[in-house]
Length: 366
Image (cartoon, rainbow, N blue to C red; front, side, top):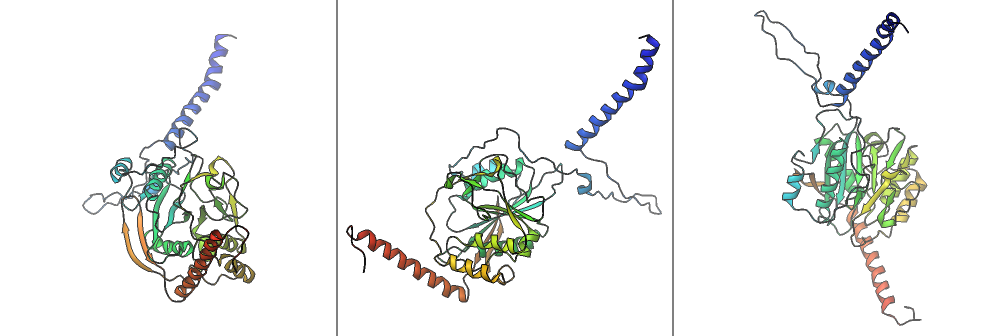
């Protein structure tokens, strides 16, 4: 090839291609680095010729957040030692009061509310907070953690606490659009556990499909306990949880039925992100009426009680260092009678088991 032809080839082919690659590289770097993007500034000149203060829309200036997976090893270290307050403060100086954080360099597409219903599990909460804040920050989530404490009663009512927690959380942060309903004893084991609601609005996302307490066997179809990501619109459409489940079990299955009755489906996380570690705790007192209540609701296909009828009293609402704390009283009216009946039934079962254990082999209680 002669030199004149080579010069023509360089000018017409390689030079435009090189300029295009340089432009593409600069544009891509602008989209993913922490820079200040130029924004349209509204300026109006007064009669004196002095410009007004620039008005900058920070959300328009920020690119969307694309990062879902954190860097580093796939498997996360589960640290079950109890951290001190000083250790937590040193780990998370960037977390705002109330357990709120969002990335400064990009705009997340979902605004998460992490709801943790609790009663007598305060020894697990610091372990949970240390682990989960690290995961959420590494994924560039926009989130707030709400701890909802049941202040009264012997039997736990998880559904009623979640209803009350959602109502109070929306008073504080009305822009929440994705709810993560999270047990305090359940921790993600890999950085593939992406905290977000499902992209398809017809699905709620079951994140904790494989839990160590079940020997990592897959959860049953439609399982809605553990760690469930549900959109605000879905939660309101099904009228939240039933308020009738006192003691362990039942409220999650009933919530799954509510979702199905409204044509939503619980989508299980079947990838490496579905593995969760279960902190040890003594077994909870089961609700002996849970199956009867589930059958009653399922046969009627009506869920008239729930989010719009929950009764509670807020005893305390405060922004603590790494979470927003809500302490509520939920024992009112007919609930006390039902709670007394459940407690009586449970005590009778316990006495019968104790008698059976004390009897010699081959004998039965009359």
